[in-house]
Image 1 (tube, rainbow, N blue to C red):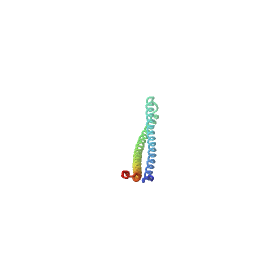
Image 2 (cartoon, one colour):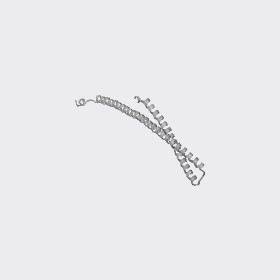
Image 3 (tube, one colour):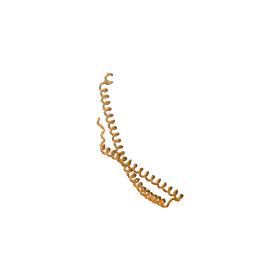
Image 4 (cartoon, one colour):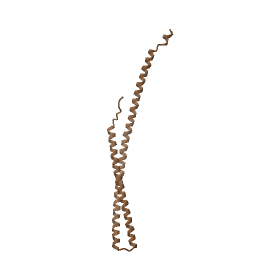
Length: 158
């Protein structure tokens, strides 16, 4: 019996490796995106704390220099927050591109795997058909031998 050979084995392996690479890239971009989002949340929390400190200091009538320092720091935080929002948007776009690339690679691999499965099924159907044909031939040969070996009824009637 001959062995099953899939003629697109090499492209399938390439697609599997490409999918694996895209999967790692996707994981890296997810980590980067999450890190940037966490940093943005942290900046927002610090800004909220600074705003709370400014309100407390206004109520307790602290020196104007301290309020100016808080305000300057708060403005700096706002610019950092806005810059971080841009970074988060960029990482989200990279994430989406990487995710789509991964999905495309996975789809290509799945197409080749389905093709391999279909060819594998066709191969076994062909093998079964050949086995059935061989079995039928053996059965016909055995039946023919029995027909030859069994005397004819006319022979006994005479």
